[in-house]
Length: 281
Ligand SMILES: C[S@@+](CC[C@H](N)C(=O)[O-])C[C@H]1O[C@@H](n2cnc3c(N)ncnc32)[C@H](O)[C@@H]1O
Image (cartoon, rainbow, N blue to C red; front, side):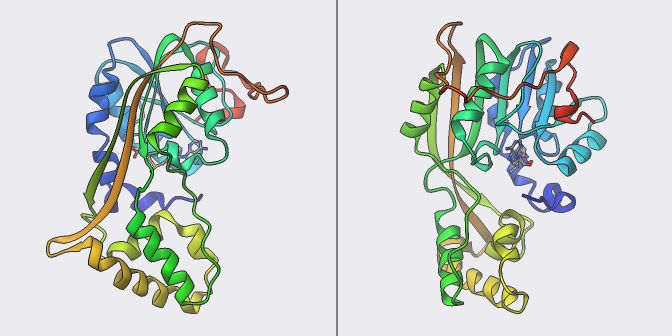
C-alpha cells in the first residue's frame, strides 16, 4: 500500500483525531515503554509520549515513518512490518490506532508479534475497523466496479467480528479485559468529494487497476451510489464501525501456539534500538 502521505494528515486528520479516547484506555504511565504499531505520521505516538512514556512508533511505510520523524524529531520511529518484528527488551504496552485492519496477511502473526514484544502482564490496546466497517462505501465501490464491467476490486482490509478477534487474542496468549464494538459515523471534514475522495485515499491500489479513461466516471458513480446513505446537508459522513480492545499478555508459558516452522522472524534490536531489519530513521 502506498500512502498519500502529504495529504494524509491534512485531508483525513479525523483518522488520527479519533484516536483520542484510546489514549485513556492505554493510560500510559511515566517511564513506561510503549510500541505504537502502525503509527503512521506519529500523532498517537506523540500523545503517548506526552503522558511521559517512552514510545517507539513502527510502521510498514517508509514514507509514513519519514514524515513521523520529521514532525516529531524527539521520538523514535522505525520502518517495520507488524507481522515480522522482534524487540530485544520487552515493552509494557503495544498500542495501535486504525492500523490492525490494514495488516491483512496474517492477523494471528500480528497478535503473536505483539505478544512476543510484551512483558508478561503487558497490555495490548487497540482500536481498528470491525465487521461492517465502511459497508456503504464498500458496496458503492463494488457496485460501481460492476456497472463499469470491471472485476470486483480486491479490498485491502480485514474487518473482524468481536467474537473472531477475541478468539484470536485468547488463542494468541492474551486475556481480553475489554472489547467494544460500535458504530462511529465519521464526518469526512476535508474530503469535499466524499466517497470518491475516500476511495482515492484509502483504496488507491484498487483504483490503479482501473483503465484511466474510466477512473473519473467510476468515482462519480461511487458518489452517486453512496450519497443516499452517507451524504448529509452538512457534508459527507463515513460509516465507520470500530472494534476497540484491551488485552493483557498472560504469564510466560501460556503464549501463542505456533505451528511447527511458523516461528516469528529473527530480527532483533540490540540495546533496544531497531536493527537494519526495521530500518531505523
Ligand atoms: C490508517 S493508518 C493509521 C495511522 C496512525 N495509527 C493514525 O492513527 O493515524 C494505518 C497505518 O498502518 C500502517 N500499516 C499497514 N500495514 C502495516 C504492516 N503490515 N506493518 C506495519 N504498519 C502497517 C500503514 O502504513 C499506515 O500508516
